[in-house]
Length: 161
Length: 419
Image 1 (cartoon, each protein chain N blue to C red):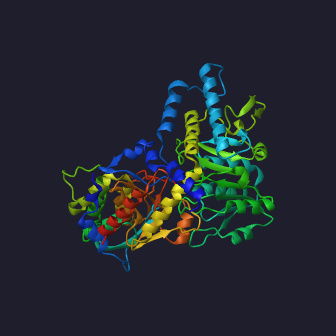
Image 2 (image 1 turned 120 degrees about the vertical axis):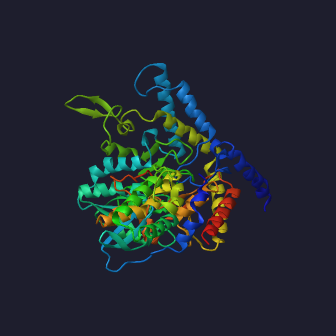
Image 3 (image 1 turned 90 degrees about the vertical axis):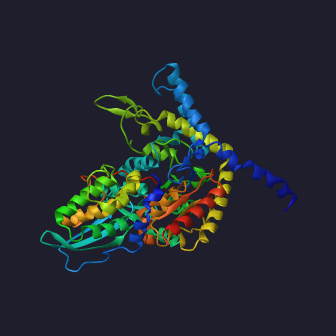
């Protein structure tokens, strides 16, 4: 893949003007996600009303891919049920890891602009971190990391000097 | 210009022909996404010239057998070539004797060898080990493991905002508990060249031995371990035109002899019974098992190659690259160079306003430019500077000025994407 297609206008736009950016007061669920390999840190808070995600917000320090992914994720899951969000999380992870058939049935819609990361192993985690953190928040895990060993998103990233 | 200079100068210029050198490196002909590769990640790993590749092939095709064992033709020639490589490395760093040069799998392995061989025998509860803020994780973690095991304490030399060690603070860290100093010669993250000769002399005046992590120094300058008077000096083959999986621990013979072995196995013994094993003499005492013979011989060929060019000529060319790149990058608005020590190797760490280093790395890759992004295995440096990561362009003698221009254009292109 030409990496140019990763930095598409929609991604750049969400990086410049992230949606749902900030902190949610009185959040019912909250988690912080870390990528220790690059120092990225993402804070996600949300309010569940019954099974529905009524409000969601994120903030943190990250690269453009991670920030845009978080922004588009919050827009996508807002108003959805927890179960629907979990389906999106699974589909997004599968897409980033190259395991999803993009021509088949899925619910990702515009989120497929991130499909290009599957060809950039060192950037896969940047795109997945928000989803990983949302999954943790929904399951009442307050801190998580891209290096959690039982996680399917674990992909090798260089650590040479 | 004096008459003498006018005679000498053209010779110096013609002696170092970067385009002729580049022709020795087949990988530099590679294209990435249709663009010529601009390799600016030599601090992570250097590229290999054809003579070293050829040496690996000729060893593997005509000389390979296990060493120090059989009496047959191949074993004898492999042993002779392996020991010849050791002597090449000995001369390259001006060690007094070849038995002071131990083959390891790399710098990390060499530091771990000293931690186990020296540290676990001579450092105990309440003792103190001095490290610096600049250290690579490989010169922090082994000592933390030792400190935890023994109840010893780590003391850390601070730096200033330029990335220079604070020598006064270093000297104040010494007390009656100080047992060891381990410090890097050149910072991998920032390029700072540390005043190790002065630091070694200060430690020795207090009877404290010093290990130097030379992984980022040996590829770029002439190293003389006797002149430095360091007790240990560790470096890696793959950062200096050699293969991966091979490195050197230089140690003073009397210290190496006092140390306990690190790994047990074949070749490091004189005799074994279930009642008692007698260890071999140095260097074999520290070379258990079959070593990476081809890699060691390739390392020998690499220092032959570097010696032929001359480390002074390499240092001169790299300084010109550093100065030019520093000047050009400083001119880009919104770009800040991280690490501005007065003495530096050709390492340029930088941050770009509003653009994360990982995005810079991916966008530069799109232009065929290979840089490293991240914390460079030196998280304490990043914590001190209060930045999560940098982009790092690291130059070698096979880089040219045109590549600096491409880097500068690439940074500007990346900035434009985020405008």
